[in-house]
Amino acid sequence: MNTDWLDRFGGAASSLCALHCLSLALAPAVITLFGMDHATHGTLEWFFFSMAASFAAMAAIAGYRTHHAMWVVAGFAVGLLVLATGRMGEALSLFEGGVYFAVAGGGILVLSHIASIRQSRICRNACC
Image (cartoon, one colour):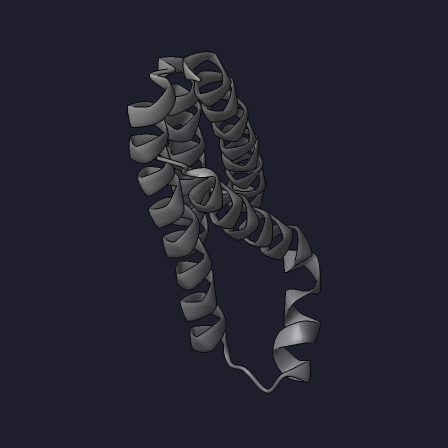
């Protein structure tokens, strides 16, 4: 089964999540510019987090069924853990710098999606 589309969408979702986190320095201006309040911005952050986490979980499962590379699944797990740590740190004001964890987690997820695509292609080429 070709799961490249799942990794591509997941990579895009993780990239958008990481870019969103990087742009948080501009958040007050952007929130005002688009007429959003802080509750709406928080909802948007949870949406990005949910999309990135959902695609990562689906891609890890589907990819493992294709390529059986446990190190790729471990990359997804680490990326999700770092992303969740950052998101919880931001949302619950647990520590300063949650945005750095969120950006790093999103970046790890992007790299995991790329690795999953490569491993799936290697497996398909070896099997045919």
